[in-house]
Image 1 (tube, helix red, strand yellow):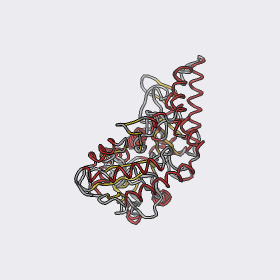
Image 2 (spheres, one colour):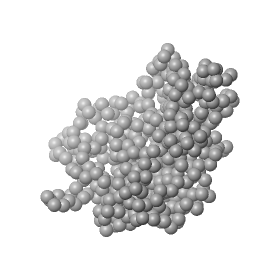
Image 3 (spheres, helix red, strand yellow):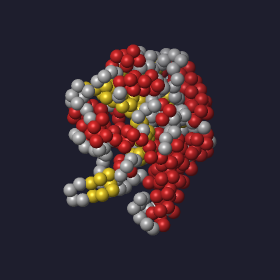
Image 4 (tube, one colour):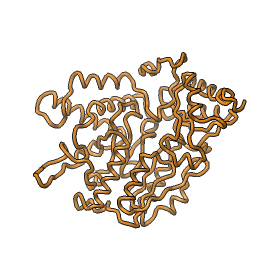
Length: 415
């Protein structure tokens, strides 16, 4: 399988590359790279707009890609909106709710309107992309923003969630898998709490879509987002899944060409979902590439991928726990997780630790990983994060652990 990923043959600083930064962006197999190039050299044209042969070919490929990617998450094609990524999808939802609050959209949109005293609930573990849009929405509408706390072991405090989610809750937005902690959150429990309160559920599936079997309708959530570049696909494309009735009721966010039926100088009428949310030129080549990435993941098998990465996570965790001065974030005993660990190195800044590992050809992420409040919760400003994918091996993990073992001695911070 590794031979399908050309970049994994690269040497860095005189060492074979160990790539452990897939939570930031995954590497791409040749099949995905070839698919984008093949589209651009054989079928490139604007979709949904032309009657000529190339336009028809491009439109067919684009909509076939929608069917493939929607099926990957258990959805129907009309339940998948193309976006430029998860951040764009989350902003789309937040701004659409804001538009509903302003009275825009069909009569059914009124169900999403917010009023002062309404509450939006997120978790303390959210990526900034699933936090700041809700902060902005709260500011614009007068709603209050609440958060579900994280326990010391990295798990969500469900007792606190039960007390927070109530009659005033209108939206519950949460990550499926934390990009810092690697823990798979209890979706069923949170969905049940939100459903009892009549609240809309929004799931950030960026860190789950490439790593474990995902059936969004079966999870019972209303809306979900994921990014192509984290799941072996190209940059610049992602998906927004929505229950059909929710997508049909949400007013559009971006407006312009391709999302309308009738336009006069004074007004416009909009297409049904998903096209109503796809104004302007779409990421056609990246969408086609993402469909190929999805087929690649399906060919390997998500259950097999998840089992492989869980085994790597266990190996990595065991190795890191044996190293003096290493503090794992979210080391919850028995928690289901993906192949991801973030940690603090006593006496060494995360950026220095990352540069030391890079000198050994080991690529990891350093910083707050766009989750500053969560780091603050654990009393650190930054951490080192290693994240595995289906193409990583035991040897990658062992080289990484041995590299971490050398960080503190190198900087004179301990044996």
